[in-house]
Image (cartoon, rainbow, N blue to C red; front, side, top):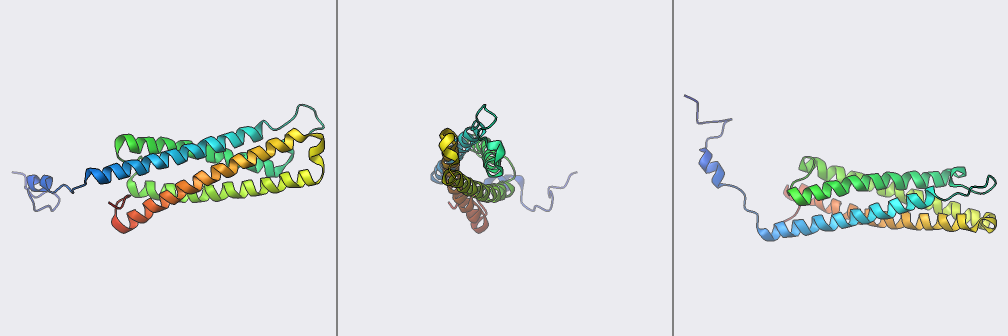
Length: 194
């Protein structure tokens, strides 16, 4: 006859089922609203970073003597950083949609929270540094008179950098919310405080 004690549990299975932790519908609604807000911020970061990458990648002329983003390492860095953030944001959008639809995280909860928080921080700082050096390079070109002959190149570089800064702002805001979720997890053991 099999033992009623399974894995050291002294209670009957019926008693275990009756002690499901209570979670109110109000806290579920707040968690859902927080997840939707994170989804919106990640979608905005994706859109702005993708637009910045497209603007920088298309910022070249067909003539051989004109400027191109390929000739400037700082603009290559701006393109790479915006592309990386766009791909990361797309992954996080998929993870947020999964969490909203299934009410569970894609990875184990603690891993997902720390993954989101750490990558938000790293990619936000990378994007900020790329946009800062891109701004410096665009100002240097304008100050050196290089933009007089090809004004469209400098304008498009400025637009790309501005879009990248907007992407950084939305990524930083989602980083704040993922930091809030990590803090709640550390304090209460759940990704939301209620």
